[in-house]
Length: 438
Image (cartoon, rainbow, N blue to C red; front, side, top):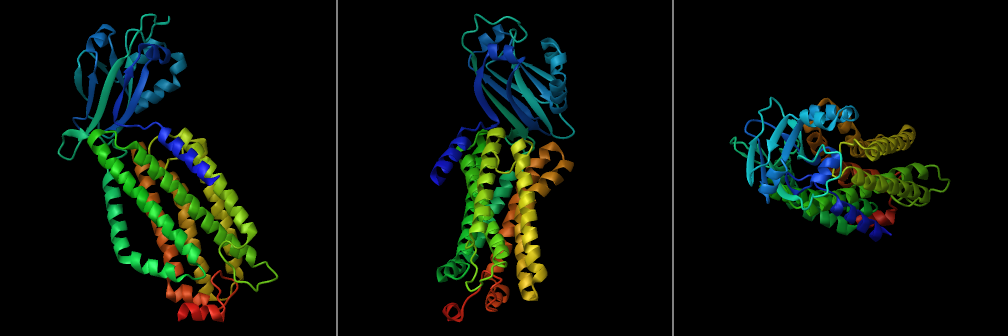
């Protein structure tokens, strides 16, 4: 069942369309006629000397058909969509902010300078676009390649990244560097700790797996964006695999955190407390965690169908995204309720500190996405995706570090476990203690 789920997920990701900045395809008059213009792509231009480059395979046919590219600024595009039913085809085309006649094999068009980054929508039109009758003699289309370029740091139009993506390439490089340095320092001690086993052995393995998946996703995104910076296309498969790694890590953490918290909460109501609680020992907690994992998996797949742009963290403008935000908020409230019940009756300050630290890690993991989506509303459209992406990666990395410190810290983890309390999943008998402390 799990293998089928992964295969379906990979298929959805790979088949998703990618909003590349080097676009190839075919101009078709019939498509343009049916839609009052054939939509090509969009790009967030910024600065001076931004450029649109177009190469045609059959420029004489384009000249014969009076082919053009028309560009709308974001606000003009929204106004056009709102008034679409009330405007004739010619009126819609007249509202374009920029028109480019396609009469040459290669054409370079400088975009007007803008005071701040703006999204431009690009459409193809020709003499048949506003024709009411079907086109009988529309044989082959016109093959094209369009490149959209922003000015780089030197002011030359060589940057394939739009304003909403600029800076992400450098961020992923710094993130990979941080993962590499951390791995060099902590990988060997952590591996030795995991090999020793212990009452929370599974938790440490899951945390390590999540961290490896996050690092893998960062590396894949960096490779994809490195290629993207050169050709405007990148390696879409690597971007899809990065999304897959992120989804698996989200599912693993959700299952672990819910199983831990609900296991402790449900375990406190047991009459028999002879056995030490383990992170997935209670059937009820496991059932709740599995149900939440299945729900989140379905919503993530649904979101991929609705939002096919290439990024792991979405701005949640779709219905599936809104449901995901609601799910994370509900899970946070469930965890808060469970932990509150435990902490309010706990007399030991050391144990309360343990649960409070665990709550911080949980809340940071679950709430960072909804909070960042809400906060991003106050920023410009082209800044939101970067804020959400960078913010979530940093917050979830910090959450994993907090949980690592909690379960590895001698001053808290081992002292709490040595209290032989049945209220924690860290309880060890005297025989077990001698094994871990020898």
